Image (tube, rainbow, N blue to C red; front, side, top):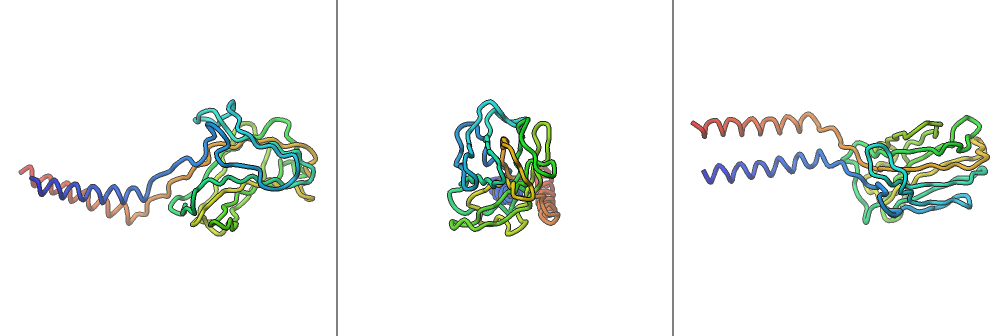
Length: 215
């Protein structure tokens, strides 16, 4: 009986390690308190970054990062030094975050609030791993954006994130833009069929073992 128990525990440990590599989605920033390492990085003068305790995306506790930008053909960039050392995020499928645009925020020549780009800052040297950007379209309520961990240069050595909002000559934003960001999180990668099959085979073997033991 002892041998069977030890063997089962060993297999369970291996299974937990395998499943652990396929799971582990986590919140990186929720801004329940403080700026959580985020700061104004570069761009036009007059930008304000603060933690707003009265705002939060649906399903999350109150607290969000508030970004205020007095646009006049400027570019604004905000950076979060979210990891203590370069971290490999490519085991996840995406990084997601929620955005809320303040009513009355200025629009550009195309009817958007500028062009938003989410950037992965790689290694301790802060090399840029540019991720796909998107026009910040007017929206009522919170909007979720997703970024692939393997797009551009990937996120194999992520040290920080930068969120940029462009309002260059082509956009021509003539007034202020205020937005909130909340709940930056990783999203689990879908387990590969081979991994699931291996787990199923092991679990099936355990079932046979237990059946024989009961006899």
